[in-house]
Length: 307
DNA sequence: CGGTTTTGACCCGCGC
DNA sequence: GCGCGGGTCAAAACCG
Image (cartoon, rainbow, N blue to C red; front, side, top):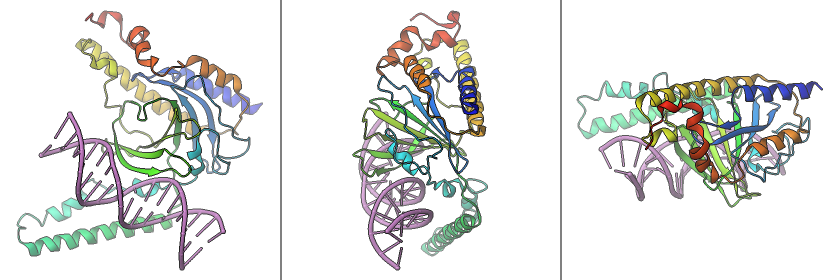
C-alpha cells in the first residue's frame, strides 16, 4: 500500500515536471521503473524514446539491483554494483595546479638537461597523485554518484541529449556482440559520465547510463533552434526554456535521489501508459516534432518566422 | 590546428 | 595469488 503511494507520488512528480514527453532536443523522455539499491544509491530504470516492444525489467521484489540476476533487457546492470568513479572524481583544486608548479620554473628552460628534469618532476607529480588517490581510496568509503539508466529504442547509438560528450573508452561486453562506450561531459568541472551499449537480447534497444549530475545548463541550442527560422527573441526564449529545463532536471534528479521506497514491480498499467504515450517508430520523432511539435509548444507563434 | 575518436595498455576489485 | 572483467588512461590517428 505504502509502496503504491510512493510510486504514485513519484509518477506525479515526473509528470508535474514535464518529464514525460519530448525534451527540447527532440527526444522522447519517460520513465518506467525506479529502484533504490542496497547501497542506498538510487538507480533509475527508464524508457526514452521507447517503442512498441517495451519490455519491463523483471526485477524480483525486495531484491536489489546489485544482487539480482541479469535482467531481461539490461545485462549491464549486473555490474551496477561496481563503481570506479572515485578515482575520476578526484580533481586538482585548480585544473592547472600541476602545470603551475612546473611552468613557474620552465620559463628559462631550453636545454635537454632541464627537460629531463622536468620529465622527472612530472613523473614524480604523477606518482604523488597516484599515492594520494590510493590513500584517499583506502581511507574513504566508496562514494558512488547516482546513476540513471534509459532504454532507448533507436538505430542510432548516441542520441542527442543536449550535452556535449567526449568518448574516452570502449570495451567489449561479455556475452554480447556489442561494445560498451564510455563518455564524459566535455564541460570543464563537470564530472558527468555516461555509458552506451546496445542490448544483446534486443539489438534495437540502446541502454544509456548517466552517472552524476551536470553542474551547468545544456550548452547545445535545441535542434529546432538551429534551423535559422527563429528570430532573436525566439532564440532568447529558447535559451530561457533551456535554463528551465536544466532546473527541472536538477529538481527531478534530487527528488528521485531522495526517494526511499521498496521496489514495486507490479505496475503494468504504468508501463502500458508510458508505452502508449510514446511513438512506436523512432524515426517518426523528428518529423513529428517538425509537424506538430516542440516549437509550437515552447515558442509563442508570433516568434516563428515563415521560411 | 584543435578537438574528438580509437584502441591497446593498465589498474583495480572480486571470486576462486 | 591468480585470472577475469569492468573501467580508465593516453598516445596516435582522424577529422572538420
